[in-house]
Image 1 (cartoon, rainbow, N blue to C red):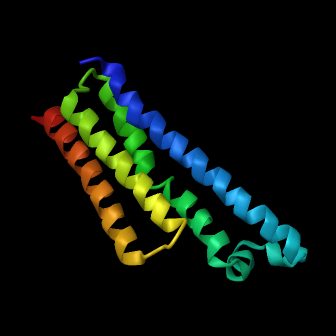
Image 2 (cartoon, helix red, strand yellow):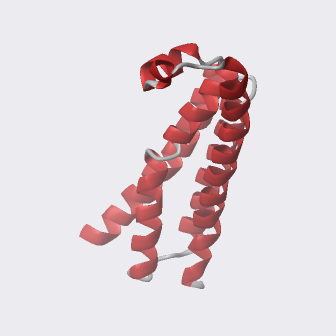
Image 3 (spheres, rainbow, N blue to C red):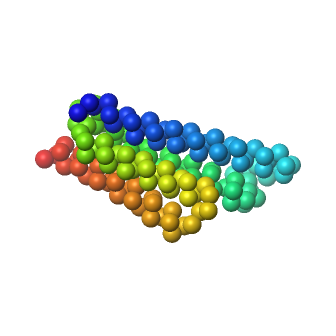
Amino acid sequence: MDQRSIFGPFLSLMLLTLLVWTYLFARRIPFILKSKLTPEQFAPLEFTRLSPPGVRNPSDNLKNLFEIPTLFYALCLYLFVISRVDGVYVAVAWVFVVFRGLHSAVHNTFNNVNVRFMLYAASTLAFWFMLARASLSAFL
């Protein structure tokens, strides 16, 4: 298998992060302009408190895309560097990315916490599978 195939899901997740970042500013800038906030209201906790869910959720989602996904990027690079990319890793990496995309879609729209959690759990289980498999092959 072409080792570079791991970069399909890798770059797709980066594009998802760019999309959420763009959506965040598309929601945040109009809110700031119409709210006429004082400098004190831009303090992180106060700004979060004042922001409606449509502004706050994209910000929370963007932060979330720098948690487990950061480990995913590192694992993908590790697999590429040691030439261990195979069909299973690529398929599971796509599962991770698809469920992260669905998680972001829910988080930034109707934000049902139960649905969002199930999508998050599914993506994270895919990642933990990849990590466990890589760890086993590294140490056994």
